[in-house]
Image (cartoon, rainbow, N blue to C red):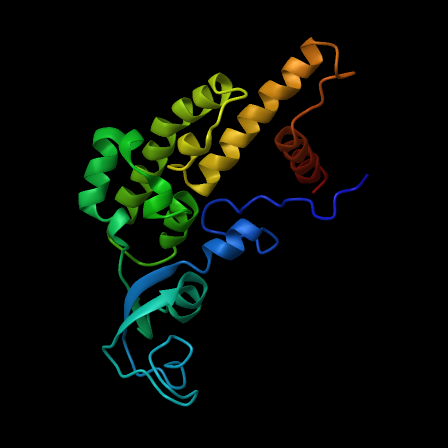
Amino acid sequence: MCEAYFPVGPGLGLEENFLSLDDILMSQEKLPGRAGSALPRLAFALGQGAGTGDSIPEGSKLEVPLWLAKGLHDSKRRIISVELPKIYKEAWRTVFSADANVVDLHKMGPYYYGFGSQLLNFDNPENPEIAQTILQTFISRFRRIMDSSQNAYNEDTSALVARLDELERALFRAGQKGLNDFQCWEKGQASQITASSLVQNYGKRKFTDMDG
């Protein structure tokens, strides 16, 4: 029986995958910013005006969805300036460097890794530090997540995954599925072990690159 929808993974790095539901939802996350010039007929769309023809004055504070911020951001024309969400600022980067495992990532931002990677599209002197913190946070939390996925078999994991961002939740589910598949095979309930979809997709991309 075929599935009605085959999940598409999020994009990597600075690029989004617009076939991915996760990326579509992530692009709706809001960024604080300020109008560098008057923005005609955008006040209503951004929840700052009563009519569709209202404009946003220069210098106004904004809450702009990521997809629109990327479209309006232009380092030469200065249409809008984008500010860092608090979880990516220096104070929180210090918390992550001390112990990333104590942070409730889902509460702070359900798409912490993907959204943080998208911030690197904007000109910001703190971009190297942001990128380093995102990488180190993932490394610090990855082993604990995978260990938990292997040691919480047939248990209520709702409290465990509640603190994970969406990427981490996907990793947790993948870990539990891998364990379940292996145990089924070990008990003779599966005819063979099949390759992970991640491995299969990697192989397809590799052969495509070789053909090119």
